[in-house]
Amino acid sequence: MEVRNGDFTGALRRFKKKVALEGVLQEYRDKQEYTKPSLKRKKAKAAGRARHLKTLRERNKELGF
Image (cartoon, rainbow, N blue to C red):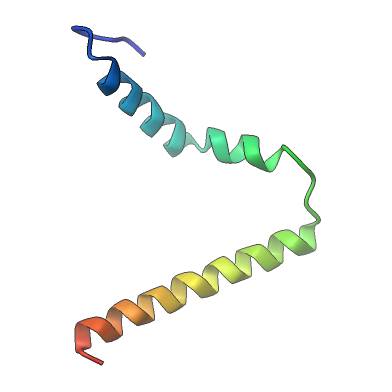
């Protein structure tokens, strides 16, 4: 990453965005410790349920419920 005109904060922001999109930090966190496949499935299912409930809440809010 190149810093242009001394704009370090902009370069840092672009770097963080690239790292987040590539999933580097998430991969690092996943490799920190071993998680059993059953726990991975359980966590993924809970995340999916949370996303679904969030969309339901937003939809109900739009409709005025």
